[in-house]
Image (tube, rainbow, N blue to C red; front, side, top):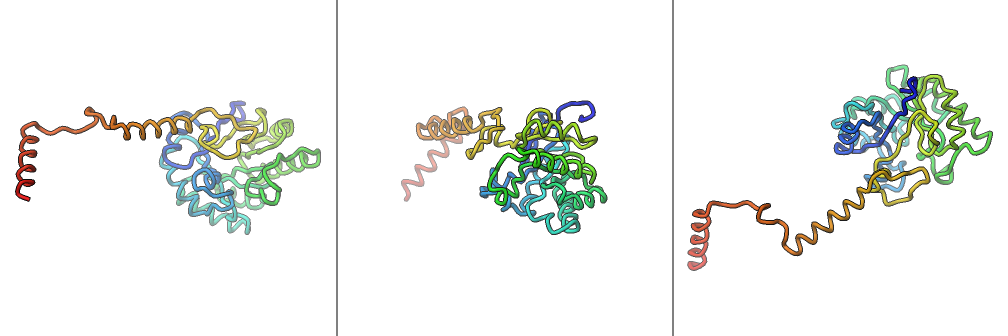
Amino acid sequence: MKRKRTPIAMLTAYDFPTARACEAHGVDVTLVGDSLAQVCLGYESTTRLTLDEMIHHCRAVARGSKAPLLVADMPFGTYHAGPEDAVRNAVRLVQEGGVEAVKIEGGREVVETVRRLTTIGIPVMGHIGLLPQRHAILSGYRVQGKSTEDALALMDDALALEDAGAFAMVVEAVPHAVSARITQSLQHAATIGIGAGCETDGQVLVWDDIMGTWGGHKAKFVRRFGDVRGEVERGVKAYIQAVRDRSFPSTSESYEMAEEELDRFHQLTKDQARRS
């Protein structure tokens, strides 16, 4: 798709239903993102997510998403101790979680880990720019690469990741001119933007952001393509009202029994009541 200049559509999924939606509607890459920590599990940040929790969700997504390339985030702490530790955890994601590739946050500091994983046959997607797993040390979720020096550092990171064997990389919260230049400089690796302009090879967004179900902070780059939250509210309120006014279930939504059996049932219950 990169060679053909066909934009790549990547979307997160966290369970079987969202995976089926990605499968059914033509998503190119399904990402089991560590954002599930917040949008599904209620954690305050992605750093709380464990490998076992990630594998649990990967299994569900793998059962529903077959055609899209299935990628999983490696949770915080699963690849930082070194390449061998990363290999053990990535193998678990592949064997137990059923994913086809893993995503790792970082630039030149994770190159040896990327190289080791690709050497043993596990495809790696990188992630540069804003790194959510490092939000504390970055003093929050801030745009990266705004100075010339920082932009050059991101370029070096991207080239190093490609050289190490990364087949693609997410570029997050980076000025669009910088992400465009990075995209042009890479020979093989595809760039997947999120808050990085439209000049990247593809885009990714979080399912709950595009569907309007996330009630937290809405980033500048988020566009809501659906209003699932509004439909859920309308559906729940309509259900409660129908229960309150006894319009649900209607006769057509209820089961019947033969009239002679009903008459017999009523007679028997009357007899029992008289005897008691």
